[in-house]
Image (spheres, rainbow, N blue to C red):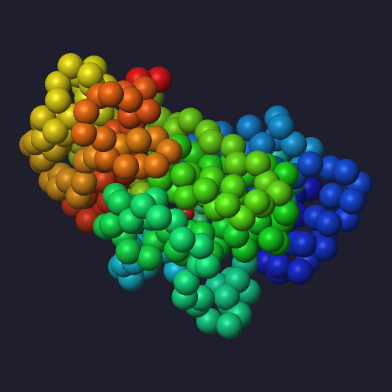
Length: 284
Ligand code: PAF
C-alpha cells in the first residue's frame, strides 16, 4: 500500500527507519499533473532502488509569473492513483506552509555562474533559485540514494548536477531521456492546456529541432539558429522566446562547430499563452 505523507518530519522519520535497514531510496520530484514522462522516471527508480519516493508540490517560488502559477494544472487525486498503480512506495505532498513555514525564502546560497543566467534563467528570473531551494529541501527531507530528472528540463538538470557536486550532496543525480508522444511532441504537464488544434501545431517545435540536427555542422551556427527561429515563427500562433545552441555542461552558447559533440539546441516557444520548451542533443 502506497503511503501518502504531507508532513516533513513524518516523511523523514519513516524513511530514516528504512535507510537504517540499508534500503536504497530513489526520488522523483514532481509538481503533479503527471504523465508518462514522470512514470518513466518512477519505473527507472523502481528498477534501481528498493524504495521509490515521489514528491508532488507546485512550488510557488519557482514561478516568475503569477498567472502561470494560478493556471498550473493540479490533479492530486489522479496523480496519486497513477503513482500507486506504477508501484511508487511513498508520495510526499506538502502544503506550501509546510515547506516554507517562515514565509517564502529569498536567495539560495550558491552561485551558479552562467548556468542560471542564460535561456530559462534569463527569461524566467528567479526560477532556478526557486528550483534549487525546493530540491535541496526535498533532498534534506528524503535523503535519497538517487534522484531522477528528465532531460526535457535540460538546464534544470545542469543546475541540480552542479548543486549536488558543489555542495557534495550524498545523492546521485540520474539524467533520464525525454519521453515523447508517438508523433514526437515532448511530454509536458503544460500540454494539458493546449487546444486540439494547438496540440497538433506544437509538434512543429520538435520537427524543427530534428531539422536543426540534420543540418548541424553543415551550416554556420548563427545561420542555423536564425533559420530555426524563422521556421518556428511561421507556425500559426507561435512566438519564439529563445532558440539557442549551447554547450551541454556549461550552457555557454556556441559560435562554431569546433566542439560539436557537446552541442545541444534549446527552444522556448509560446503557443497562445502556453509556454513550451524542448531541446535536442545535436550529435549524440
Ligand atoms: O521539474 C519540475 O517538475 C520541478 O522543477 C521540480 C524539480 C519538481 C521542482 O519543483
